[in-house]
Image (cartoon, rainbow over the protein chains, first blue to last red):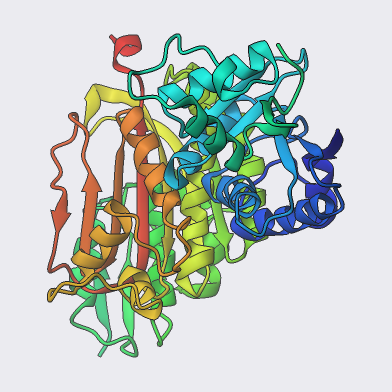
Amino acid sequence: MTRIDVGSVLRHSANVPFSDLVTRPTGAAVRKCIQTELAALSEGDVALLDFSQIGMMDYSCADEVVAKLLLALSAQDAHAGYIVFHGITDAHLEAIEVVLDHHGLALVVQFADGGARLVGAVTDDERAIWESVYTRGASTPSSTPAVGLSDSADPARILESLLQRRLLRHDGVAYAPLGPVQ
Amino acid sequence: MTAVITVPPSLDDLTFESVLDQLSHHPADAKVIIDARHSTFATPYGLTAMLTLAQTRAEKAEFLPPENPDTVSYWARSGFFRYAQELFDVRGNVPRPRSSGESDVLLEMTPVTKSDDVHGVVERIQERAASILLNKLHLESRATMGFAMTLSEACQNIVEHAGRGGWVMVQAYNYRKRLGGRFVVVIAVCDAGVGFRSSLESGQRRPLSDRWDDAVALEAAVVNGVSRYGDPGRGQGLKGIRGYVHRWEGKFSVRSGTARIALIPNWEDDVPRREGLAYFPGAQLQIIIPEKVSAAA
């Protein structure tokens, strides 16, 4: 897994001597630098975006860095890589959740102990299936338990949607977590 | 003939309108004297708006500072005269600003013209704001991060939309006029730039309605999140400010052109929308976050 230190990117790409991710021009500079690094990944690689050295993040920067990265990643012609977010704190989450909700996006936060959390605009069924995959490991529609799903839930469709949104990845014909099984 | 514009004894966002009403009779190239000799109180909004007023005058205005020594000392501490002396012909001597570790001026008058200025403002405000919000306003710790975000977005409004520089000031004070003397933190961000209506027009973002004026433009931008940029991610800054202010039962007002709209909490009896005000260019934002009620009781 490739690790990208967003704090380091901030200092070097935006030439800013502070640790706060604020303003759109700063966010755009940071995003472009991250996108350059992501472009070097091999197909299917997972990049870990590490926000540990970032103080606060405003809405504009959350939109420029987080939302636009995810939007680019989910585009039809996108490079087939994946991103997990690390070092996200409540201080970042307020802005991130607002922009994710605004764009209908979601992301995976990975904690230092390997645990993970799905953040953003997802339905209860999507969250239940995502958590199931993160708990059980690589899953197929037929092996995904229907426990906790609504009557109308279609596991095959939901798994494919989570894959398209880069919240799960392919492992052969199965759907797998982006990080370790919990 | 030189006109005298009288600054009210208490200069805040509402009484500043009387200054604009008086000025509306005099073109920008007319000689005027801004008479603040009898002012004894000014909010951050009053002070920042006064500087932007100076920017709108083609003929440099004279400025008569407050006579009350405490008042003029506070205006000096706020950083007002540092900029006023360039923008006005300030009459008489004004005190040099003295630094005070105990001051409740969280952020003295600070110019905002470019993105880097916003970084500086956010960096400087965080530690002091955290202390005031936690210890005097008795808010939860997560309020401090939202406060810096709110300040950042308010300042970015100048950088992204105004087309010219403005000022920001942040202060904590005892709000005697309302709230029975509870503490508040006030953010004022004022510019004399293009204003909301022209900003939306420049991006072809006027709503599809026959009515189009400053009030409609403010409502589109502040309430509906319309931005002059077509980027679907735009407009979230003001939305975020509204959310933060609502969560902490604060007040948020924006004036632009001839209109003003406000998010009014229960403790305030202001009106949500004012129209037909004296024209004043740019945008003037004020955010008030009050001390938590339960802790004050």
